[in-house]
Length: 270
Image (cartoon, rainbow, N blue to C red; front, side, top):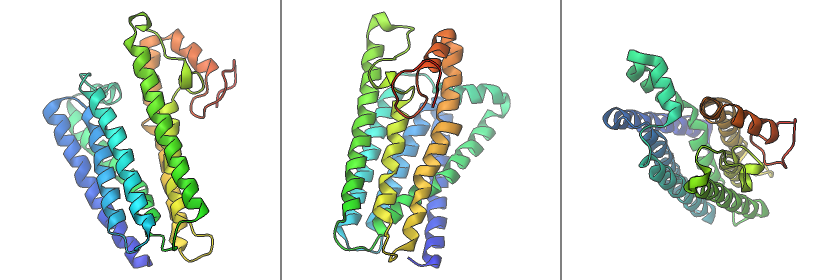
């Protein structure tokens, strides 16, 4: 991949992501349920990542493996979000923003989703780079990438299922799930989502120096960590949980790691 090819790829990814999020904005306007935004983002990014992987200029089996893993990620997460969205009136994170924006909500939401498209460019590019590595055959780090991805998908699915089962019990109404993986992290689903993005740099990086662009794939997990921990993941969700549960959630915060799974503790928070 030459510098010119990389610039062209980034520009193409940016345009497509912008169109995807413009579509998500239209769906939000029509349905009034902002939960569909994350579903459209997931399927949109997954489709874009899979397409760019299959069209990458390499004939190695790595390209097909990366495309397959992207499809698996997109289908699992997208269908989970779709199922969740059918049971809610609105996503509390977006709903809170729309309420604060008042009459300017439509314009502000449009530009927020365009910002999401912008910060998604490193994610899509990391997928493309993972599939574009021309190294022949499968290396040990490719196998490691597949194993990390499998752990991430399994861990996120397990966390989602544990939360679903907890909420399904009538006696847990109004309580905070602090069992299973949720006793080790306040957001184990976010942690495993981030973990899966570490697979793409492992596919992309060639320590032999034949594919220097591979190191740029590190932007994927770095960007995802920043989004989940500091922007659109933990901060708005925990603000909502504090408003809803008050001291109960504050006590949960004081004893449970925010992101990285860690045994319960009394004061230290990671």
